[in-house]
Length: 436
Image (cartoon, rainbow, N blue to C red):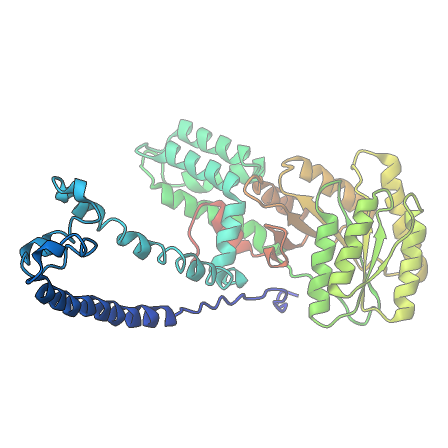
């Protein structure tokens, strides 16, 4: 499923039509005004010839004293100060004010096209290029990465390697939830042959990334399933709030996009919201959703969903379970019951048990993995909520201790934010190195 199709993303086209007729109309009005100006000038000359023999009739042409031909310099000066005769002693501020409104209409059209070209290229890199995904992954691991990189810089900048430096470095690694064994191995690697010497912090980051990759690479296993098992039953487990329901929706969307038929069983009968959320996902991706009233027996619902999926010929059956705290024995016993019921119809079911871990839980995720692996037989891990507040180093400690396959990680709510696990990218992101 690492070569899944990309779907659900659409590009929006913004078409703008610039109106040129408005400019043509303004060009036509200009000659009309000029003609209007020329017409009164000819009439003015005729009036002056008539006025010469009659100097006493001057009060009648009072409305047109400005057009007299004899005081030609006067009418030329009068139209200029006519709009503002009182502002004649200060012509300089008028000239300064006039150019100000001119750039205003020029500035207004500039911000309009600016946001449009910026919006258009955004969805293209977000579509799932490697650099775009690495950027989101690095942002999701920002908390762990910043703690490690800032600590490494402060410890190793302009300092020679000695016992105190090694101890400080080991404390930084442990605080990043990498685990004691991992921290010890990295410090031994760094100190080998480097005592009493200055070390470039960039070299330390590279060693850190190499050691993390060495631990994560063996468990970088894509999620696959046996198509001969029909339906292929996937049981999704985890504590409250880990993101199980959303993960199920994304898995179902990916499967249906690849052409597989999917049935989803809403066995979290304690939360009506979880059932409704799965129904929305089912409508969106075209999957059948089997549900029951709130408080119904979860194991019985799982049995009915498995039977229905078999009869309908579904390729995949994904079963959601109620969020259980690993320290509640009665709730964990109910999970065991679901597993037993599924085996009544198919000895191999569930064919996969996916543990969804919240990356923000830190060391508690180790305990969750241990209990769920014992009760439900976890076959793979999916880590969610790598949203910048996550303590991603815990995934390294879990991988080293349990050796369970890590199938995928999520850095957001969108389907494209859910990607197959990449050990190299994860290691470089958490060590604060750029993508290669």
